[in-house]
Length: 62
Image (cartoon, rainbow, N blue to C red; front, side, top):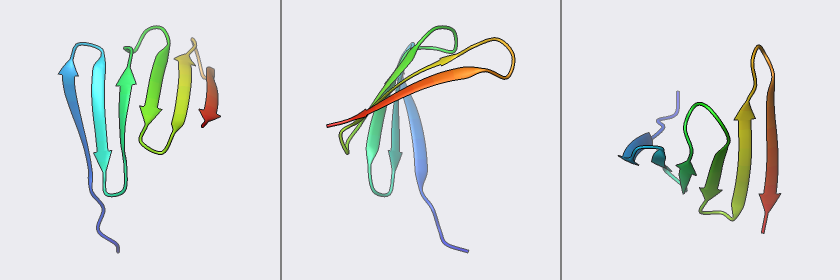
C-alpha cells in the first residue's frame, strides 16, 4: 500500500489551505453557499451543494 500525505489547515473562517505531496490549493467559502477552490496547477473549481443528493460543479484550467 503506497504512503500518502494530505493535510488541511483552516487559516480563517471560511478559508482553508489543502496540501498534499504534489500540490496545494486554497478553498474559500463555507458549507452553505458557493465554494471556490484555486489550485497550484492552475485549476479553478466552483461548487455548490444543493439540498438532497444534488450538487453543482464548474471547473476551469488556465
